[in-house]
Length: 88
Image (cartoon, rainbow, N blue to C red):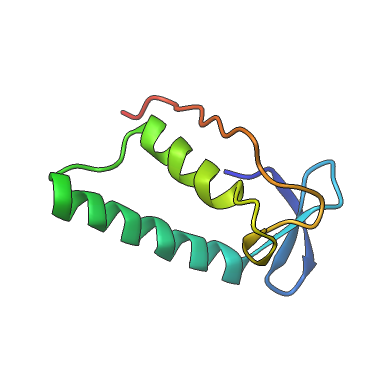
């Protein structure tokens, strides 16, 4: 979970120790996209995507160099690393 410490304004929270914010609507949208990707892998391969597959997908989307597809003002993503934790 994000280390959110205070509500910024309705539906938005500051990330601990920063001025960056996250919000309900963007998290819901991203959650729906993740569910759709998982469904595509389940349909095509009978399994969920692996960590390297997620990293490659995120790098391809977030690292797109075409200006109309850039998702950040200050650059593009060059590397994605997901750290997994064990579940019980």
